[in-house]
Image 1: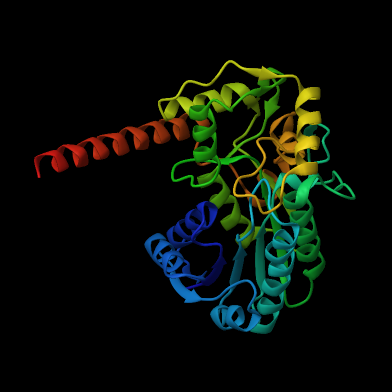
Image 2: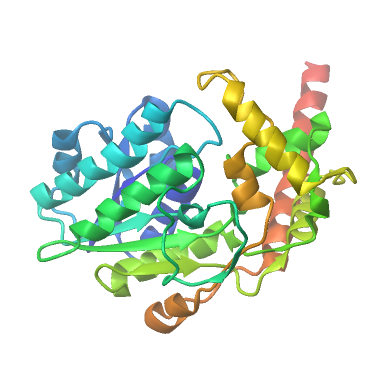
Length: 340
């Protein structure tokens, strides 16, 4: 049985990658830096091992005997101290690469992002030949670009590295994007940038995990692959559908793009990096959610045999069913409490 080591296994993408690997017959070991993380990766089907991105020795020990490393751990936030982004996304990736070489792991898949291309301009039908700008907008985009640079440079004899770049990850069990959209809609702070009538690519988390497994098995050493749900969709229509699965109607309020850009730049200039909450809008957020961002996954389809396992319609139905089930469970719990 082939054996894989996963970082970020307790996160949204990581949990789904573990499940996909297990379904493919892999035995999975996952780094866990806390008891809560250990419980999450065990529930997903992996054996937890105590390791953090800052400790190369512990990572290498966990990777011993593995045929594959999937590096899904990252600091994915709209705002925060730049040194933390660099420590997790860049130095953490360097440590994972060093540990993989030390442990003799022959193959590594890095979960990247289309945000490495973000420079404020629309990203239209971009393929893997589009160059990364010299300085992507924001700490997240910049440090993920630097991490990808390290991964691609490390590919060579003894270690084949592959990068996947899913765009706009969504789906059931989302603990990152969807809760934030729901919260913003409920608080009345969600607004469409210039009406939201521009295109976006998306990638359901099951399709992300499928692409990761295919990249592990068939990806070209040093290769980069975009992953999507297929043809793009209007951003406003997609987010509206997402919110409706949670029983929430999207707002009608819109903000001109020029005004949003000016506000984002002004807020970034004065907002403390260690504030309890991020600014309501940032240049990075505008670069990935406020303009067209569409990518072409033809390479993944041709070289990996990739194709979406879950359509957008199926994913929306699954989200709505999960929300309804959670609502019924909560109502039942309240009723039982009332009778106690």
